[in-house]
Image 1 (cartoon, one colour):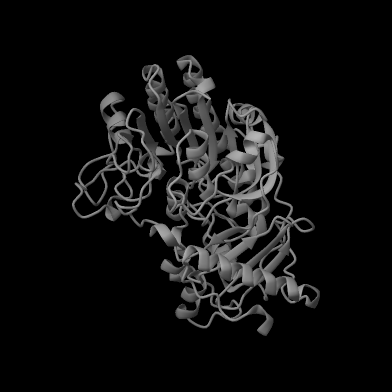
Image 2 (tube, helix red, strand yellow):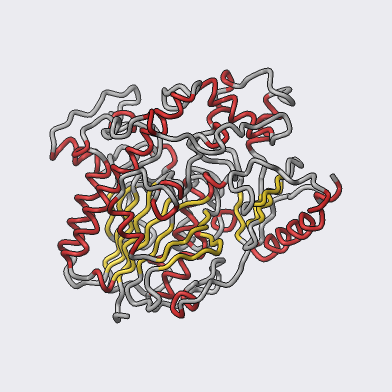
Amino acid sequence: MMHRPNLLFLYTDEQAARTMAAYGNDQIEMPNLNRLAQQSLVFQQAYVTQPVCTPSRSSILTGLYPHSNGCDKNNVPLADDVKCLPELSDFSDYRTAHMGKWHLGDEIFSQHGFNEWISTEDSYRGYYNPWRDRDRHCDYWHWLTEEHGIEPPQTPDGFNDFGRGVSARLPEELSKPAFLAERAGGFLDEVGDDPFVLFVNFLEPHMPFFGPRDGQYDPDEVPLPENFDAVPGPNAPLKHRLLYEHFRNAGISGLPLRTEGDWKRLIANYWGLCSQVDTAVGRVLDALDRNGQADDTIVVFTSDHGDMMGSHQLVAKTVMFEESTRVPLTMRVPWVESGARTIEQPVSQVDLVPTLLDLMGHPSPSHLQGQSWRPALRRGEDLPDRDVVIEWNGPDNGMIRQGRDMPAHIDRITNYKEAWEAVNDRIRTIVTPTGWKFNCSPMGEHELYNLREDPGETRNLIDDAAVSELVADLYERLLEWQRLTDDDAHLGADPRSR
């Protein structure tokens, strides 16, 4: 290992694990990410800490669970006294840069140990801290207007932003991935021999689920998920039934979701966005090769959460199903002798910060809640068997804000209050190394899945008497995790009392 190893951290928004060849999908054209995976440690069961943007990102950067770092819901600014990776050790001789979507507060201002900052989002200004200048535009806006002469749209609020629906309709060479590839590539071209930490965060394949690659994939040739027909039934959690009816009636991003053809078109567009990002990632990796520091650089690729994309006829995230919570995670560490291999044990993104600090030769602060994987990775061993815990703190769901789209006929929907409680249900999920997944719901809508026998999560075994002792054990393990992490969420009654 070099004296001052570098870190290139690439991540996307809303990309499920099943989009890459390393996770079983060779239909999406992603030559750059697939090649990177072949050179990397591939974590087959990597889980987010909470399946929505802000909370997940907060854990990726701080090594703390959302309930501990304060970002337990979307659009919550990360407090100044909660430190991110560049602040957790001495990186004073490093160039530290963050490029792309931040979604942890003041979007366009350098902060949390990142000395260089490239911004792409103007849509979060309403959540900036009050002392920030909310009239300023992001770097992407200036790139479009000043370098390419693109006139911004006239918007009612007077800010004249390039909203996501506008930027997604621009040619690919003017897209956010192209902008980030240019800026990140430029950074790597001119950083020379200086050590660096560079985070590059792409918005895509996040909604609006259309873009310049629409048409790259023929919807007729796109398969529906194997669990497409496993729609939430009358005994499913209320939140799942609400979401199913909401998307069936309202669609998403102006796209209908009534027929199999509708779903295939949506998935085809999503695949196109994945391919678009891959092209941009390739440009960044080419710049790293030109720089000459590739052998001294850890390269991480992951996403902040997945997307249901038709599984159970749901879309987006916010649920504890695998498609929402399990993401790609590859890590190329040139000085790890075990080289490229597959890691089968379930892991959590809360472990990324301590692992990366350890691999870079930096000590991990004692307050971090994740654990380093370095000892096992260095020796080429399996990781220690550990449970993974995922949390949900609600609400972040447009269907409740858009109450007119809520179906009146769904079982157990009696009023707005009950529906609101369902989407705010503070669920805690445990995934075990033996393949069990238990979703513990304060509303009592528990779920238990055997992921080895039922990876599509189509058979909820919670009422099977044969697993009652297992459920009790998993409940106790969640309580112990709560004790260790100071989590105050009420888990509800012991499932054995059902």
